[in-house]
Length: 165
Image (tube, rainbow, N blue to C red; front, side, top):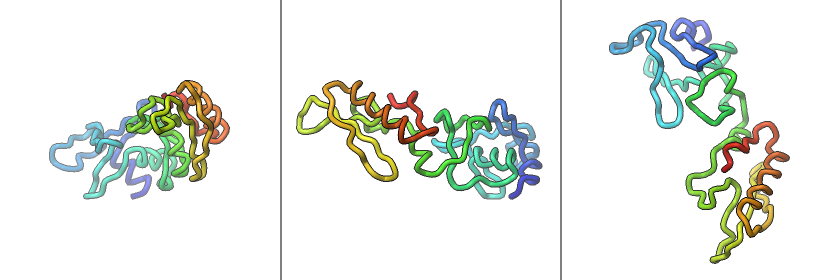
């Protein structure tokens, strides 16, 4: 699919990030219907038995080419497909902008219990595939502050401290 075919199929509103059908692709979908299929991670659209992520279709519509493999939603909301919220990224850069892991027990990204029943906290950060120890702390907020400082230095424009806690 190229940009002209995508423009024939869909209308995109850059201010809202919403995508609408210009044609009725199949029974039950009307012209002007918003694309709202959600797979639990991304909004998707299906056409001719092929599934496309909406954020990738948006890039095609706005830039005229399919994006490379990885893209990043700046605000971390993978359903927010405003063009101003999308940017190209490497897999590693995209990982810097993720939410803290669901299994996180301290409540702070980059902060772990020191282990063996200790009441101390360990701060760690991964950069270029390498896990770096940032020290041990009595308070998780201090460990998190060490993580935030390192993240700002090492993750550059892809750091997102608003979503680390």
